[in-house]
Amino acid sequence: METKDVVASNTAVQQAENVTNSRVVEQLVAGQPTSDGAGVKLTRVLTQPLQYRLDPFLMLDAFGSDEAGDYIAGFPSHPHRGFETITYMLAGRMRHRDSAGNEGLLQNGGVQWMTAGRGVIHSEMPEQEEGRMAGFQLWLNLPAKDKMIAPWYRDIQSDTIPELLTAAGVKVRIIAGSSHGVAGAVQREVTQPLYLDIHMPAGSSFSHSLPASFNAFVYVYEGEVQIDEREVPVQRMAILKKSPDADGVVIDAKVDSRLLLIAGQPLGETIVQYGPFVMNSQAEIFKAISDFREGKLVSTD
Image (cartoon, rainbow, N blue to C red; front, side, top):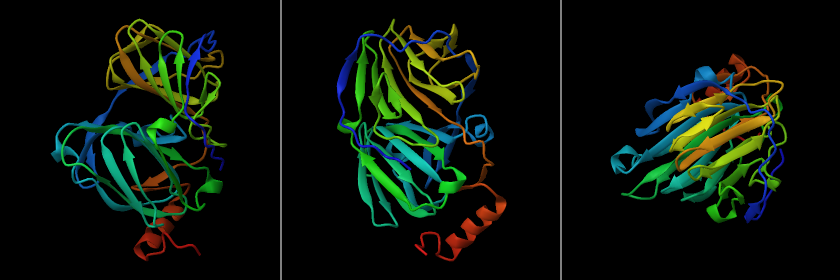
């Protein structure tokens, strides 16, 4: 697994990426209100029935509230095995601790990228008693060959996330992958995830190339955008249709808008999920449950 450290820079890009044939919207998805952890209110945007369609991505949760009662209980200690979590904090402060002795503070504009691998037990607890807390958690699957690698994590502070500014005034924060020749904060060799936070002023357009094999989606969290004449309203995920003659996506904003563009190379492997464990077979799930119950989930043996 490859990781890459980069230094953030604001780069004026004179021309948008050349996209001759944009992908279209295959489906609009409204998230499902739910709660997780010790009762944190959130919206589950990418749900389990969409895992094969959006492989290698397993889940996307959006959370945001000004009411402390919606988030204050946090996510007490819980296990994971077999995938990666990417937590992107738009506003607020969250303290992370895990079974490997790691600890970090996730705050405004920052990202925590955690590889659960063979097993980790961690907690994510608010470090605030009032004010707004908002952000996203994305689950990225690991290939079968990497399911049992050693756990790893990295806190990425906001000022180290690479950014670029297009000639149209669109600001792009590059969490993973690359955009317009600028490498993001994290790279992954197998799934090659692209994770962009895009801020579009009213009247602007943004183009981004995408390999035909990639699964891709857009989530609008402020404003409203248009993709090939299809309106994508706020708090909607637009699954982008795969087509051999489409070489990317063109997004237009009539009003000030903010959105995530997420894409990646599908693994094409069997996905078996049981709560916080994602493996390739039922037998591996049973083993994960057994290891957790017997205190072996985080064993280094």
